[in-house]
Length: 446
Image: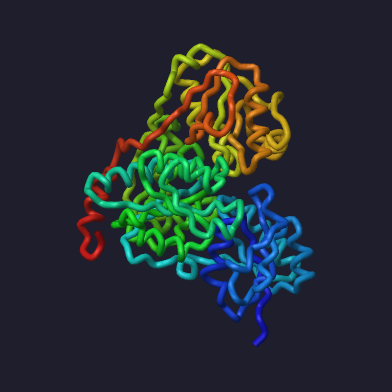
């Protein structure tokens, strides 16, 4: 039997998982390459042989997605497997056209081929776009389950941008673990809010090994919580699926891959940020939920904002630093920091673009929708330096930090700064306490 030559198109996350669970030990296929997009400095590396398995003693090379047409022909590729998230249908089909034009088939793997089955009950928290409020939803779920004396272990969607062998299975229990694992800002934004509250988080590259480690965590595990990334569907089969939607981007829930998969398979749909969105936009999102998944429960929630030291920024000229992925491939022009600035009555929001240096200049050039807001980019030491220099170059009185981490812990800011915190508060429909009580009372679960 001739093996099919495969390229997995990804962004250092879902692509590795799809390989591990579907292709790694499958002798019907020969994965000849990964291609990378969205994340800087991923291409040019290898998926190591230690992770790739016995069929790939030399590992698997990772190329830039821009090389895809040439790779298909040079490597005699039969099939390309699209394996990353938070992309418009137009972009997905554009990649499909490139693949088909080069002669290969275009494939999307679904949940039945990629979801792992846990020995523990699983709650998944996913979204229709990045930046909708998954993390605050996950935190609230964990806090509620802890009140019921259940030990919850979170498993986070992958962000392995460093040494892939070293990142095979990562356990985060303290803030010090973030430094030990050489986390990027994007990783810290997801892990730090959990560990700061004393929650255990697992992540990495090999999710079969990660799931086994989480189920057998030394501190105990009663429930697994899948804390999703971007708008991807869960790597682990959920017993309760929750999906978060954003009325600041109405209609995106039906126009971005694979967010609509999350919507159509969810048990609970949470429309977040209703306190800062237009009524008409909320209605569009609600109607789309009812059309796509009429059996799902609908919760409307506020993203409540608290500022550490509001006096630092009230009436001042401020620079706003926001969560990076939300602004970049999430296509948002604002975040929690901007909402806080408007509510606190700042004198002026200062434009960071004239002060941007290095990779931050490249970010602004690539993402034209960005205005007077600075994405907290930090995928490596150079980007951290560029972020620090851009902030310190900006002529402002103070800095509002809207990213979920303590940014002053990783860079030095030469002007007063204050952090914005945000939490989920249900205001209409069933609340999470009621839904989780039902979940806990199901037979053969918790």
